[in-house]
Length: 158
Image 1 (cartoon, one colour):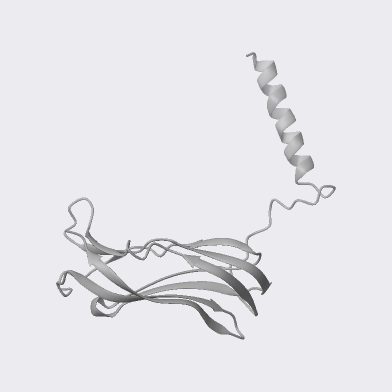
Image 2: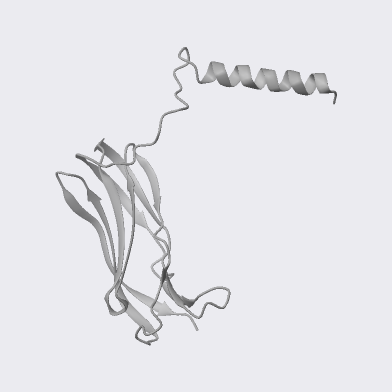
């Protein structure tokens, strides 16, 4: 392929992007996603997560620290008013751990929530499993509603 055809291809690409994101088509390529929640509510159809995948495992790369690892939750939303948020909360009281993930809900659809892993103190209680609680809530300035609430067992990987 010659230099001239590469330049022509780049020029065509630039023109197509300019037209697609211009005022005539109406697509705004500069709009930032909504990150602050506000008023409103959402209707949740269901929550899916693997409740058997909650684990305490050894750290990677020889850190000598154990980690609480939590699977991703998928929340299916069928209706939304304004800007509520979904809050995914995992609590393991014996370890003093609370993991959270949240996202602002603006349209119906599926939302994935994935809390970060949490390292445990070296003097954390030693057991083969721990009791925990998984909660998913819809929150806004006007409401805080629990839509999913389960007890769970956090297994310690051998």
